[in-house]
Structure formats: C-alpha cells, structure tokens
Image (tube, rainbow, N blue to C red; front, side, top):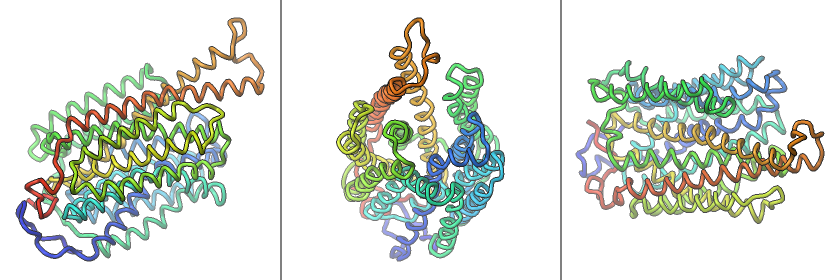
Length: 512
C-alpha cells in the first residue's frame, strides 16, 4: 500500500483511500494484542513455570519485571528508531524479534534463560508498540474513519490484559505453560505476512539519532521502572529503590534540558508542549494506575479468596473486556468526530471512579454476580470511553516524522502509569492487610506467627487481604478522579469536525 502523497493542511485528500486500510488495521491490531497480551498471559502461568524451572520465590518476579523493565525503559528509543528507519521496516523487525524471543522463552531450560527471553521480548515490544500506534495514526485520515479505527485499537489495547488472563488460564490448564510463549510465534508469523501485504512503507525520514538523548532518556526510564518494580518486595524506604527513583528523575531532568538544546532531539519539545497532548499523556498515566491495580487485586481476589481456577479467573474478566469493547467501538468511535475529546474522557473516568468505589465494598463472602460483575461492567465501559479518544487525540496533528516518537510517548505514559499503580497500590494494600491481621489475630502476649493455622486464622487473613484491597482501591478511585480533573482542564481540543486543520479533510499533519 503506497503512502499517500503530501498535501497541505486543510486541503483535500490527495486521492481515494486505499481499500486495504481496514486489513492494515487488522494486522496492526493483531500485533498490539500480542504486546498487551504478553504483559498478563505469563502471570497465570508463573506458578507452573516456577515449579518446572526451580525458581525461588525471590527471583520469580523477574519473569514479569524483565519484560516491563525493557519495554517501559526503551519505548522512547523504539519510537524514534521507527521514525528513522521506516515504520513498516521497524514493525517487521519488532515482530520477528518478539517471535524469536518468545520461542527462546518457551524452550527455557532454567530461570536465567527465561528471564533473558522476557527481557528480549520487552526490547522488541518497545520497537513494535510505537510502530503499531503511529501506523494507525498515519493510515486513517478522515475523522470518521480515524474514530472507528482508534475505537478498535483502544479496545484491543485496554482489553488485551484481560484476554491475556483468559488465554494464560486456558493454555496453562489444558496444555503447558510454555505455550503461553510459543503462541506468540504463530501470531507474529501471521502479522508479518500481513505487514508486507497491506502496510505502507514509509521509508526513512532523514533525521539522525540523538545519542545523548537516547542514553539520558532511556537510562532515566529504566531506572524509574526498575525502582518501581523493586518497591513492592523491598519497600519504598530501601536504599536501592530511593537511589533508582531519584537517579532516574535526575536523568530525565537532564534529558529534558538536553532536548531543548539538541539539533535533532529524540523527543522534540513541541510534541509535548501542546496543552491538549500533555493532558492526554497525564490522563493516560493516571487512568492506567487504577486499571492495572484492579487487574492485580481482582486476580488475587478471585483465586485466593473466592477459590477460582486459572481458567475461571480469566473468564471472570471477560465481561469487563466486552464492556471496554462496547464503550470504545459503539460509543467513542461513533461520537468522537462530533464531540470534544473531554466530553467522552471525563464521563468515562467518572464512571471508572464510581466502579472502583463500589469494589471497595467487597467482602470475603461477596457474590460475583451481584457485587463484582456490575462494578466491572461499569469500569470496562468507562475505560472504553477513555482510551480511544486519549490515543487518537494525543497522536493527532503531529508531523509524520514525529509520529513514532509521539506514539512511543503515549505508550510510555501507559507503561509507567502501570508500573506506578502496581508498586504503589500493592504496597498500600499489603501494609493495610498486615495491620488488619495484626489487630484482629494476635493479642499482646501471643504474636500472630505463633498461632497455629486454623480456619479462624485463615478467615482473618482473607479478611485482611480484602481489607487491604479496599484501602488501595479507595486510592485508585481518587487517582481516577484526579485524571478526570486533569482531562477537564487540559484536554481542551474541540471536536475534529470543528478544527480548521481537519474540517472536511485529513486529520494527520502533512509530511514535512
């Protein structure tokens, strides 16, 4: 599919839209599903992998951390590389590398081999994810089609985590945990064939790689993501955690200063100087904090409190995934070209806030049908209203040469938000649970660790766990509410049909 010829902003389209653009969406969506799915599919398989490979309890976290560390830390570099070497070329390289890393992980003979494979998956995901979003942003030009395409993409991006839980449960229970990794080889092979058939070859932009910026930016992100991942097992006051977080912040501050001086900056300041785009990035990070925390807490609630199997746990998330798809494709996609983005984003975040508050009322005896399901449906529908306009608006109006790095910045906000949510809210939940058990289980003369395990003790521990989840979900609700306030104040762009540069024409900025 050849790339459309350059056109002046606000002018008529250069030619009829390519008839294969919807097939391109299918390929882009498939690749995005693989990246998002892999953030959660291994979670349910982790206990089986730990037994099979002889992992210690202290090291098992690296199956998750190695992936998120490489992915979140290298996203900015991956986005700029996509702009430099061409997005289709980078897309295919990312798919191929991800498939090979997945095959390596599936064949792992020991913990070290699996950790290395997961890190490699993260490296290639950091190249692949920005390509997927930037290809989408440059393939669909008219406001109505762009809204539909981003609706589908947002549903995949926000619901893929739940799909990963379902797939992980099915593959682990009925095949082998290794197939949670091998399945990526099949998905990537299909996507690679589709990429060569239907995706545009954007070529090179002629820009140069900002090496100092890459070192400072990626180094800062890696340090912060690593520090956040270590905060839960080590504690926030641990010297390593404090050093990583402050060191990462210092590197990012140096990165921001360098970007204002570099002749060809890795992240051009004008990309994030726009008020609406900055608001979308902050909103994305805040919304993801609450959503990732919910996935973590509800996975434990289903399995450890309600006693669900891995498959049943995955299926319990299915209604929320369907609600996300409904909100993104049937509401956001239909109205984004006629409504201002914040008219969808703010109500969506308010609905998510209400849902999280409802979930704070869970007990060890709560019914899924009457207590969990309604809240998850409301949350899913709200998130469907949020992610699609945030992604579309954040990537709108940038030059094609900056499309990759802009997309990477959106992905970085999502990944860092997820890391913060997992570390911060899990620490809050653990602290509250420990305090609850200490207050209800042990008397002054008889510490809790000396009490033999009994049904009463197990009940109090379960109640403590649920209490901790409730406290953390109150914090998550507050963060969601803050996201709604940020979106209301900062995301000030009007409806696409009312913007002079896109009225009756293309949404994407012209090629420089």
